[in-house]
Length: 269
Image (cartoon, rainbow, N blue to C red; front, side):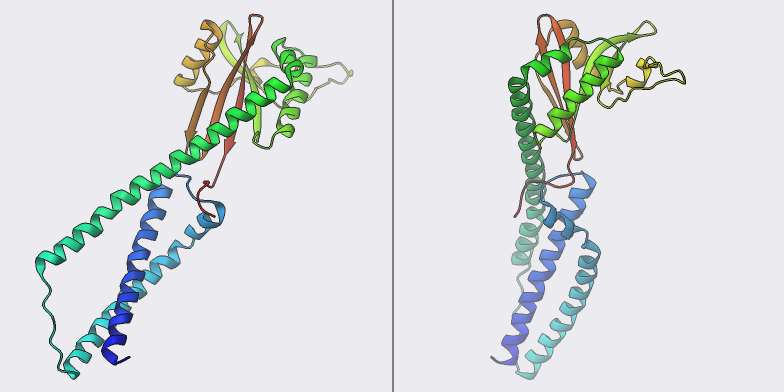
């Protein structure tokens, strides 16, 4: 292999490396800015090396500069003629390269959507299986009364649900009640009995179980408790996944609320 071929080969390798680094940095920026969850942990962790990728990009640019100079020297030494580059052909390559970025952008959002749908299906299937196979325990949750005994029993039941299925990282139960004359939603999960100095059980405070909600959440929950809506509600945002799962029997309604945070996606090896 002569000098001309070597210089040409190194230029091709360097150019491909630079393009790959540009795509890599673009993917990293998009996933971080929009909070997309696409790749698995081992691939996602690689994105944390983006600083090194930028440094490599700078080094690659310098390498290209040196290589193009070597090419000119080699061509001059061998009395080679520099083939003119057609402006029209050059524009086509630039345009084709620019058009790939919208495609990559669309792929990233499609991957995030696919991850969210997969998570939704897992939560839906797990919730349905838990409710159907533990009917007695679920029905006990329907007998809502704000008391120490009921709160302890509810915590035990929800803990059992979480330990039964690994797709349940966190589950709580929502009911509609009133506090100081205002309709509110209470969410129950963790509870421990409190006693005073005399050993008497201290009555729990409803305010400590108030659930922070958004307007869309309240609109949905009001339809569930007041209008009998049975439709499930799934929300995916920036790696946070929420599932509202209504359960009604004998005129009593509760909502099982499943939540999870996922740092990584499901694509990749």
